[in-house]
Every structure is written in C-alpha cells, then in structure tokens.
Image 1 (cartoon, rainbow, N blue to C red):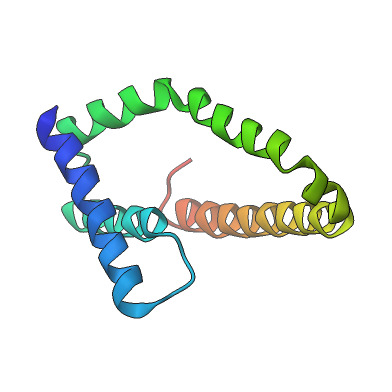
Image 2: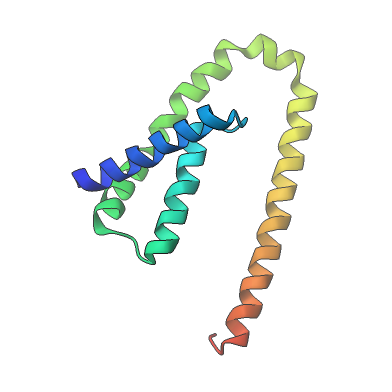
Length: 118
C-alpha cells in the first residue's frame, strides 16, 4: 500500500516539476495524472498497490467537495457578478465532453467489432 501511495505522490511531484519547468497553464496534479496514465499504459497492467490506494482514496472523494462548497459560499458575491459566463462555460464544456465521449465510444465500438469481439 505504501508503494502505491508513493507512486501516486511521485507522479504528482513530476507533474508539478513539469508545470514549473514549462509554465504551462495546467495544474501540476493534472499533469501528474497524465504521467500516471502513460506509465500504466506502458506497464499494461494496474499494480495492486496502486489499485488499493486509488480505491481507498475514491471512497472519500465526496469529502473533497466540502472545501469547494465553502469556496462557493465565500465568493458568492463574485460568482453572482459573473453568473452568465460561468453558466455558459458550464453548458459548453458539458456539451463538448458529451460529444467527445460519443465519438470515442463510436471509434472503440468499431475497433471491437472489427476484432470480432461483442
């Protein structure tokens, strides 16, 4: 379990370093998740230690919404000034996510049908 936690933290640290070195406008933990994804793709399997730690963290994911909710209440006045751009960006990003998901599912479905899987 400690090895899995160390792997997750190392990926996050590498992501922070990449962001600092390149000044890209993406949070370090997001870059760390991409690094973890690439590592898992090359490894071609999920190590049990990483799986255990990930499942343990996912159990408590709902607790991470509490600080976000407090932030919303703290900055309610600022949000009320920009409610229309926020609403538009939420709808546009949700729509784009849905379209990309459908396109990926279509491509994957074609590949599965081509390989003879059902």
